[in-house]
Length: 401
Length: 224
Picture 1 (spheres, each protein chain N blue to C red):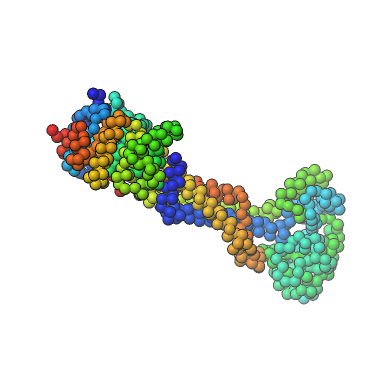
Picture 2: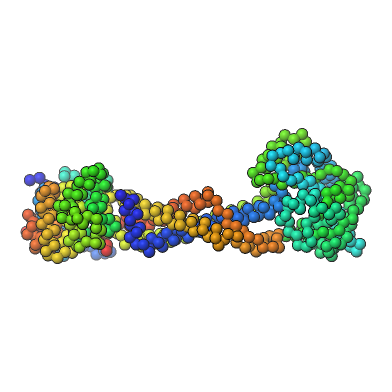
């Protein structure tokens, strides 16, 4: 009956109850939207990281990633073909991207600029790395002699699409060598150091330039996010001493730090929203309870303890929390499948020149979590507001009008 | 006759900053079981304070009250709640019914809190509503009833608790003379049937006529 009384008390002042439900609903909805937006940003950023440069991770010789060598090719993977054959049989592997990197000199006949070359499998990489920010021309694909230049490098060489560029380098045996290329495209990652020095050519062409068949690393495109464990297991059992590095570690500075930063920011905003909701509810409930002091006095005079009266008000707070949180969640889901169906248009992210849409990615666990937060917040605010009244003397409560 | 309350040298004062008002200045008396008492006296004579102390609504400051062999000063909060819930029934000037509950539910509410089983509760509520003549109004909420009807519900609610004593502070003050008389008459008859003592405060001479003993307070003291 206490619960029934609490329920009916809510209907007693419809406008006030509505204000409380809306406060909780908007607070809960704001939390849910923010969680969904945060996840949307994270997922977008993760996809961008995976599909722009790193894939789901890479394999190289053990210790190579964190070391600097005078002759790095001595620490490259010798027999890529057997590794490839075995990697292709690992569950979840979709693409393999063997790569080499090297220092070289780029010349267009008028000027010479030093750069860092990457030899890649253009056909495979263009299928998977579709978010690489190409600002001119197109991504390197099946053009055997094509070269993709970083924006700063292209500007320094004054290179246009189709211009001839000669890549001068040293073979792994120490002799000079050169290959001719033509510009297929220009990319821009936003990292000045990267855009000013990096260019990409076909792996075969790089092998020709370096006079080797070794590969420095193998990046991987997986069928799903949770499948990287299969690669770790494979590498652990492989005959050659390799190491596997997932993309969050490869892109620790940008990706992982951004994720950590956004998480911390979310924590702070969540606290701010909760404080606003608690204050809003506290204020509304305080007024409501002050008007019911005589009723509290009646309850106390008839033997209800302070705790039992507190329970009555907490039940009301709980019910408001349930209605408010449900309202907020339903509202957010409705808006998300109608007005925000295509996501929110965002300005270009760091390293990108194009706008992008972030979807509010709502998940069941988020709805459950925000529902609990909404209900608990409402109950706590009501509890705090009730404390002021229930501690008054019964005679004072009965005297109040 | 056994006494229900035994009051000894009861004193009570209110402090408003530096001002101290002595509401009761050494009241001693006994209230006998089953008797109808009416406290009378001018405004500020200490009637409400005396009732509040008897009903455990105010804490005893000086002197003591013995109720069923228990001294109020020595009671724990839990014991006080038990007495308020089971042994004392209240009737207030402004009825103090729950506006969101029907007449029937208002009466049933405190029975639920007393832990009375549902089947017994239903019988008690039905009897009480029939006793006060409101059985056909049982589904109405207080705001749909007249003042007299509301006070009848309050009487029924106080009596169904099966208290040893009913305490009422000016229960007829918000009612017209005719309705007030009906209410007091009803209360007297039913308290005889239910075996409860009655202690009311009232200025009204009509109420005084019903009382078996009139207790007059003046400036916080009993007046002879």
